[in-house]
Image (cartoon, rainbow, N blue to C red; front, side):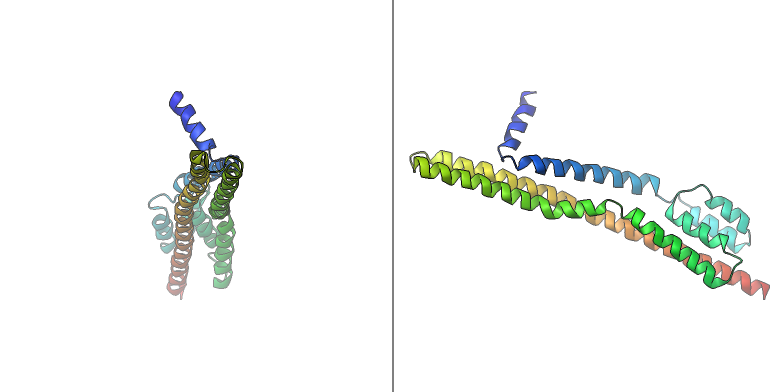
Length: 211
């Protein structure tokens, strides 16, 4: 308990700006955990789903392919389902249906990532502001006591720099996860586009067989 208390004392030596910095770090951490679970559990495409659906579509088993997609709240499953529901309609209609479904998933995949982007910008600025306020306090001590107590000045500046260091650490962590989640979003979009393209190939192949 003493170590924890000492840790809190060290953190709050950075001044009152440490409060919004810690709040922003908690918000960012919540977003990181939420997005991690979303991408790796909720919206992760099961192995073999796309190939299984497309195999059925190539074999003309559209009803079975639809059944394989039904009930799965996944971006790629939703796009394939939109295409399969229009499989016997004109090609342009099928393509537009899949395009609209894919586009509707993009905001869902990008949800809350902007919070990390905002934290990347404001955390260093809040840290810098905290440092400036701390240094202003140190110079105030200098005007009152002169150079007789140098530790009170240098110590105050050192403590003020804690805020800047904290802001930079928060921003660096957020940059890593922001880029990582953006990569996952792009991968999901590519997966939807690839699946839609392959389903269109299956549709054209079935038309050639009929012809």
